[in-house]
Length: 265
Image 1 (cartoon, rainbow, N blue to C red):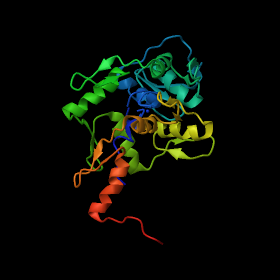
Image 2 (cartoon, helix red, strand yellow):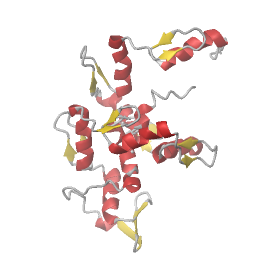
Image 3 (cartoon, rainbow, N blue to C red):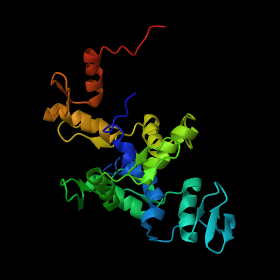
Image 4 (cartoon, rainbow, N blue to C red):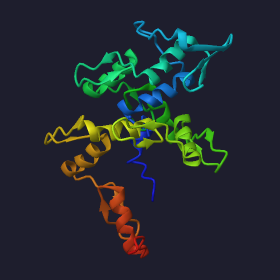
């Protein structure tokens, strides 16, 4: 099955620390990708000391290394380890006043608030696209530069961000570390779990400004908006017919290729 760039955008920036979150699902769903980027960009701000009293379960491997006793991951700073421990404890003391969503870190909540405010202060100098996060803009810039510094040693595929690379590696390992507490289904990335949880909660945080219809994923809202705009960005190279979704174009292409992938058993 073709890996749809547009529909995976939630993982990159929604597939993503993505989310996926690609804009904050591009933004809210990238909380794990943001956590993953803590060591890359030293972006952590310890605002309001709300950490759990986890000292009793912290183990210091050496004078420069603090190790999580739950999963074995190590950190160079004790305060970052305390932040990491919230993954295991589930503590989320900071709540959005607009939608009620909770976060482990104050700055994560503040970034999330840009979904509601629409604030996108970081702009690409090449194409003018704006982003809520500076590092989302920086990742985007690699589209223009072509930079892909992270390479898989199994298949030699390269990626523009470490989070995409880590997600890809699970294709080889089969690892699915994120499990739904409601039904037990497991996922290879946290953004997929966040989206899945909306099946159980019924949450639909993305609303169309034209007709008021709500959606559980930002990509679904983006698709829906094309009903109003009439945009059809995916064009067949064989006959010139255009489509609003890449999946529709892929289906159409079978007319030209003659491909019949579904067989009656």
